[in-house]
Image (cartoon, rainbow, N blue to C red; front, side, top):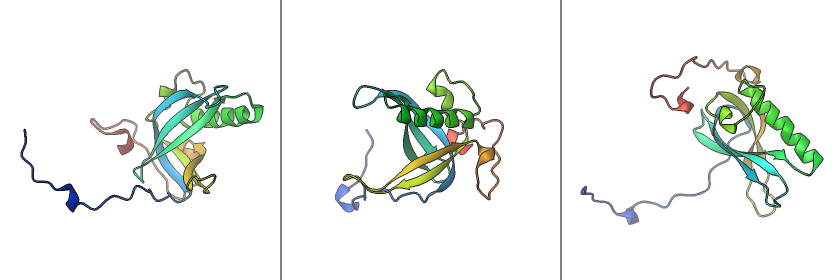
Amino acid sequence: MASINFNANEVPEQDDKFELIPAGDYKAIVTESEIKTTKAGTGKYVSLKVQLVEKNRIVFANINHDNPNPTAKSIGQRELADLTKAVGLVTLTDTAQLHNKPIMVRIGIEPAKDGYEASNRVKKWMPISDASTAEVITMPTAKPTGAKPWEL
């Protein structure tokens, strides 16, 4: 056991609301992914956790993979293709293949709607070289020993 002198009443409460990330292009990596079933149970989507490297923030993204609505399915397939190509792949057999590879994401802001607050959304997935940013970003070819994926 370790001795400690701490009083939780002396610490101000934390505001749970995150400020929105300004719209723009950001270096990122996908850190987690899984295939989930839609609420209606009629389709599937890829659920992604995306780390914005320079902002040290997380954005969640969902991409339709299988959907009875042909428009939703088409949009999802295009978005998944963009992400797959952004990480340097053509075929994808496991969503883990998307993890820890440097990409650029275009972040947009979804306005408040149906009782939900405004939120950030990934609008586009891009390879680092295709990003429309003034800054040139070069990635190391090998990760330093012990480096976290977002420290690339």
